[in-house]
Image (cartoon, rainbow, N blue to C red; front, top):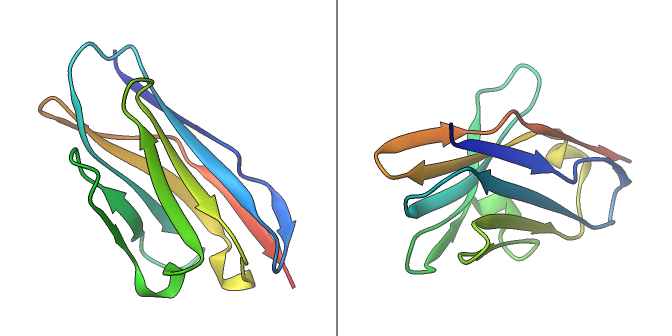
Length: 115
């Protein structure tokens, strides 16, 4: 069964940096669009950034210029490079990927930004 596994979430001070990683495990089909979403307590899950199979990216306005999404297609791995983080970036971050016909989610990784 295909599985998405996130890692890299941690407690970081405002202004700091971290990198989230999402690995696609046990997939023998192509991985198309991939993205990062986040959900803060009391809020709905929201899109942070996405990258399609051709490498085109899009970002939520509040993270533009601070976050960068990249993918290693050979390794079927997705990254989110987070710089100059702010307390409002605190949330559980989820990886999403379209693998074949399936739309898959990871279990989430917690990012906490202290002021």
